[in-house]
Length: 216
Image (tube, rainbow, N blue to C red; front, top):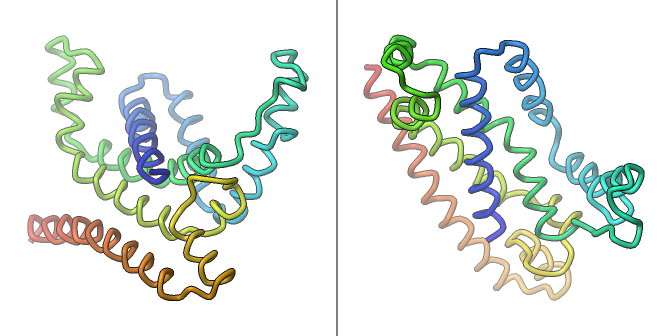
């Protein structure tokens, strides 16, 4: 559930950000967004988890900033640690990777199609949904597949940020082994994870083979 919510939010934000970068006439804004979205690209997950733990805690940086701005009182602050914090962390960390792929695919489209649509009076949303998205859907699928596999394999984020339930398979597997020595259940959960990732990998490999076949 956590991964599904994260992937859905990631798709929405990555497509929106890529569309703004590809279609915006304001170059300074595009350069600023291009710089900002690349920031988390090379930060390890364990560092991101510690950053978000400091940022999202009840007495963390975000709540302290809201209190300093008189937007909330100290008694009204909430902790975002838990499944919400895991979702925020995954989306922020993977946004750079997904946006880089999708934005690159949008930039590779023939500019004559977009110019023709603009000359015919098409709005930017219509250009996005009718011309650009249908052509970059395979790339969006690849970005989301790779992000899903990455999220499912990370242990540090749910272990450091997750509080209570729901949790993730990686945490449950580690808990079963370390607390109970229950390797049977841990192995079963591992097989479930492998089956899910294997199905997603099949989509990725199929897309890669289709691309190579088209180029040859």
